[in-house]
Length: 377
Image 1 (cartoon, rainbow, N blue to C red):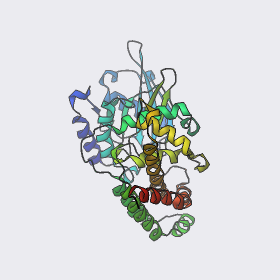
Image 2 (cartoon, one colour):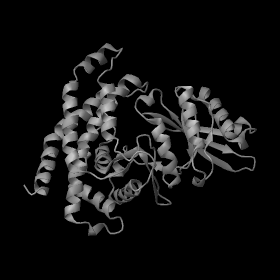
Image 3 (cartoon, helix red, strand yellow):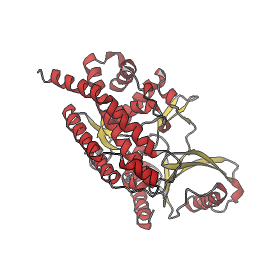
Image 4 (cartoon, rainbow, N blue to C red):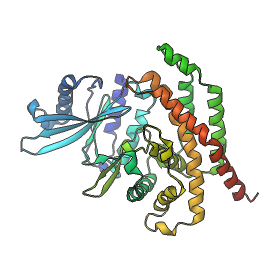
């Protein structure tokens, strides 16, 4: 990440309204996420001392660093500091993966994070540095895809998603879905791979077909007039945490958050029941979806939701789940070219795009028949 991006981010940190709590700290340091722990740890300690002045004279032995997760696009570290008074303080440091700015609008993410954090979601935002951010440590574990479908947790998730969707974040209230998809399409359709085998596989993709699919999906979803909300846009199990002792559920990681269609956020969440292995046999059935919808639409009186409202959201979510497949398929192609992480992103494109093709006829006819009835034709 260049110096311009770093200083833009630091300027943003300085702009956080003072009534949102303590000032956001900043540092111009950057840390290479590909370093091995013995090489990285001294840089992490240097960052902590630079950012938190009360730690600047502590001995390095007072800092304990462990990896919480190596996400597909970033690395999450837990740093525990033994302070002079003997208290242990823990923070998390998120290092952005290389080239992720091709995929993620970091300025949009940081702008959103300060308001999401201030509203009490996830971890408290503490600071920002050249290629990452520092947050408070949440004593909780991320859900597995199988946990995410447990009825008790589904109700909790639905209530939290509803709360998230009620956030007011300054800036454009325009839904970003189609801007993002067309940006991804333009990037994904103009790639060239050094690896000959990958290039051959890439050349089998018909981008004319993908482009037609996007236009067709946009035409159909526009007719559904889905409510525009402030959306998370990446509600996979790894972005939902639970502290079972305190019965607290957290939605974390706002890299893709923006104003968007609620149908996309919910349909995308359902697609994530399949997990990284993309086992779409795990996609929730109608009863499981209705359980989510009841707690989303009327968190305090879930059993008073009308059949009409349930079915309307069912159509909306399942139509937008098709868009989710195309969105992440294109994302996978860009990652296949840009990311150094050992993951079969090219294979991921085909898993997601083929699932879109498999579900297309069923979900299109569901939407068309719903629209025909709504129009009284």
